[in-house]
Length: 227
Image 1 (cartoon, rainbow, N blue to C red):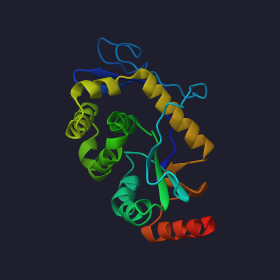
Image 2: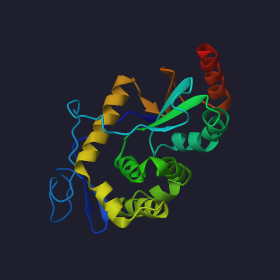
Image 3: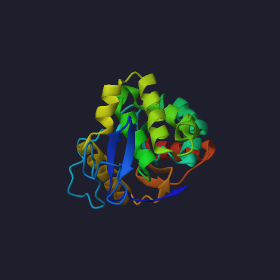
Image 4: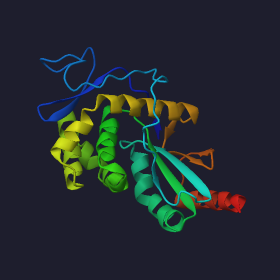
């Protein structure tokens, strides 16, 4: 499982067709950390209003049980959960109206943040389809970790999902949105006492990563309590 890590001061900038993580000690030639399409990040962000962030959710909003998953797009254990466990949960609990499933991103690194920006750029209708691609093809789009290659791969996913280059450029370079999302992540992670991914709240009770059998048993218990 990935441990909790907060993103420090930095910037997201588009240059030469790619997105780059910048800070005061690592800027691209001809730029500064605050230049261009920058998105400054602050470790203390409680003052930022995060009410505009959309909760990405599947299932009936009136379902008797609510599950919140905290996951990073770059977390291997999260990818395994989404490939091997979530499909059964979706089929047997979400699609049947028993469970409302909320997905909250955790930003442990720049690549996870970039992936979130791209996925959210597609809107609520595309979000979970894009999430499936990112989790299933995690190793492919992350590659060797070269920043320009990662952004190019994320851009290809976005284009495949029906977005335009112009839309993606706007999403990657939206400074206010980056600040808001990072603040939202930090506030949620701290409030819910999270320290790794994937982690879950099932009816407000914290659970660590589980097999389908254990997850199903936990859901059945909560459903019984809700009757």
